[in-house]
Image (tube, rainbow, N blue to C red):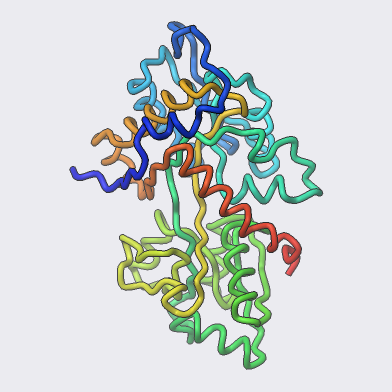
Length: 325
């Protein structure tokens, strides 16, 4: 099976980019008998948890660890788990998932009083990047984003459901509102399933979802229609669907599953973990399982993830003041 990862940076160049990190311990990593814990900051059984558990045994094989254990630390929209991750010893034995933009919007919101930000974490690798899409039900009169915007400009009340305040879908709606110069009424639901119900039931004009899983089945069956994809490129599953950029709105929003560690990790340990994640993600058996589960795999080296994260943070900051829109 051909892998579709585009790896722009070699492990050697990563080492050069990490020369300022603290020197590695003389001890061999991972030490025999030591467990590597991967924190998942969400409940067991969710999409992120399933993907993490799918990847863990392949990381174990690639890195040569005695054991790789998934530990769920849900609460406060991932804040509990990521707080524990940031506070862990930077020895490589505790790493975890830092979903974006959720991690960013949490620490940018002063009311959340987060004890971490990007400086308190070490980006290790990206695992999944899932595009955000704008959808309507089959009966909707809207055939494109431009149709929806034209209606809003004409004075119609246009409501867009998302999976929660400052979720990727809400951020996409806020950017669309800014670029188009119109008022779009956000309707915050409790997640993708609730947003889907809002759209199918006609309670809202449109909804923001992520491609994959049940959403794909509803689109393929004709119950949902894609108005636009907030991505720089066409979607591999729905190649005929237009991006928002093609319709005049260069908005790029996704939900991403990054893997990070605490700040202060040594360069050699960072490289070893990142390389092991890459090897695990390229394993044909894992790729087959991930594809069957509808995961949008996208590997990034630490420096690539750092740039991706920083760029998303920069784009998110001006939207924070609009969060109650």
